[in-house]
Length: 325
Length: 254
Image 1 (cartoon, rainbow over the protein chains, first blue to last red):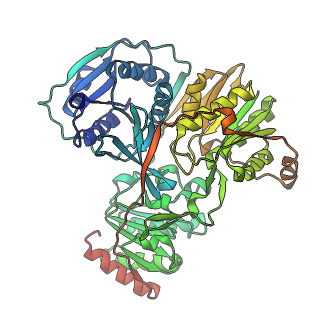
Image 2: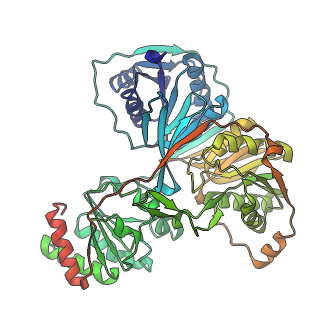
Image 3: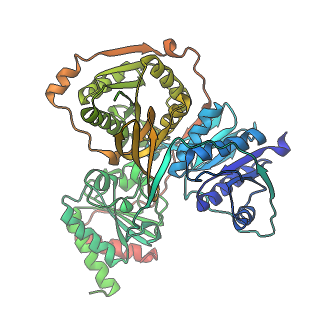
């Protein structure tokens, strides 16, 4: 058995499909597994991509007349491959669609399911273990399936796709699937307007928290960000509750996960939900009036003081140093 | 329009403290609440009822302590509620939860819509809704930020990663909602008082589904380790700012 155990991967989104292949290889590096990729009506180029990025076998669903974005259709396709290949685990890209698909698969099969996984391992008994965050990231939970296949959705932007290797040649297997008429009909898809900011690409992020008393006062914090050539971010209360800043600027578990060179938290108490989104930054700075605020536990440098005094002083000192007007 | 709305009692995750040295979470004194998205689900169910008539039934799986949240759901506008008492803390076992809810829903009877939050604020799995829809074999629309009901069909806007999907389905259907869908109203004193007179039915989990399947097991919990320099300046603002600038310059990040 052990030589032939199979891990299936699937995502309707190309970037995520390659990340999920990398996640499967994280498991395959610990024990002997074959890695399969499921794809619906792929182009020839896409089959080559999947092969170059780690698929040993590619299962193609050719006879789908349905829109690939329909989860009802994806469910039928993935179930067909599972039934014919009997995998140990099925890793699904954790896009919102994937986060619906994975539990539906598990419910249909009556098997174990873990959502939004950030790490994988294999224990001494050969069981696949998946790690996921709970309690807003305060703790990680390591899960194993009691009923297989273990269905796991993989948190996006967590696994780096493998190095491209064009010498790899995957077997291609065509699978017949009976794909029914989707019961949920997609009427329209509206691409979100790309916000002007991209937190994840910024080398410096200065984030405002509840310590900022009025929306207008965000200007003080943004001035500091601009001086450093960075961008302004916000915590969940500022974005979701007060709506002072758009969603694309939110740092934290339900917002963006960022790793800038320099992260400055201004008036941020340091709730776990927030820390999860910025803990891998290279240097973390905190400014807060409350010496006991949890943010000071996770920072490299901190200033205990009123942000309304400290931030303008900091901006001034930086301008002098960087020779900016 | 008859709506069943499922909600969960959770701990206030923003008040959980981490004992990093001891490698554990501190739950003592942490209050409980209705999970954030579930509150939006209750609010939306009540709004749909106001527009289209019908009833709103609250449903939860919890403990005796969950009565407080059930009363809150009734105060928010549910007409009646069902609390399935379950003393085994198996919140991680979403399939088990979905199976129990599905059986309870069959017992409650006819419905047009089931509303759920898209994910609970403690476990964040977002699995119970989709599993419940699948077990009941009804169409489902997840991560919904807008619902319109029109002649036997629901039309929804789904809030996906970088797009909004407009989709529709015939009901009975299951919908999971996000926090964007509405702003839950705080019940008035009158509503709170009226809630205590509304019917609350309690069932034991064994009477719903005696042999509840478990499909996953928690092998262990881990507290992520964070090690940082933690150099804190407590000087006057100008002086502290100067010291900080020097420190981050040395780090080579400016």
